[in-house]
Length: 199
Image (cartoon, rainbow, N blue to C red; front, top):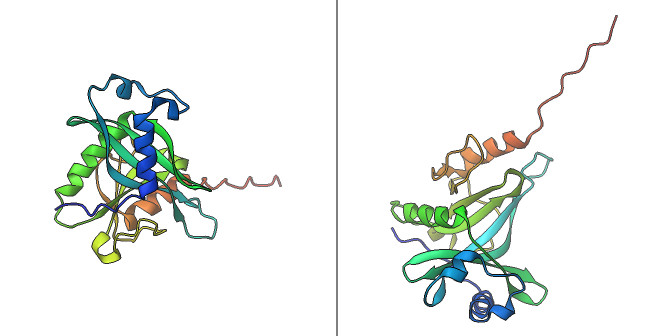
């Protein structure tokens, strides 16, 4: 079933188009995949990029925050890189280009999501403490297309992208209610046994 893709903010898209159209508009060098691409490059499939904060138990529930939008950059029929934007004091602005295994993994996860029988709104969710990136499949039709909501629903799905942390299978959908406790457990320091006092 087609995914319910939220519209990216127009300034975010414009900033990516400007970065693609003018190499001098970007401070850093383009990644090799972009430099080697033949023909025109186009930003497609915008995904809101959220970061999960507070997963380590602290008495407060974990929250997500929208930190940017990621666009997959296509050259012909291939995705060759991604472009990230960020929210600044002046609005949405280009941040950087990226490449690597998460790009192909994102594409695969999106194809898997499109084959599901339920319609979801795709987002990216980063768990920095675990160096983990997931495709967050939000129950879009029930919640509308607002990409700034701050917490996954228990019935939303998280699909870990490759490479995933050890012991967590890539590209296997998990309900939020099942995966978040597992991630929290991984980040909880083990209890240190008290040493018995000598008699």
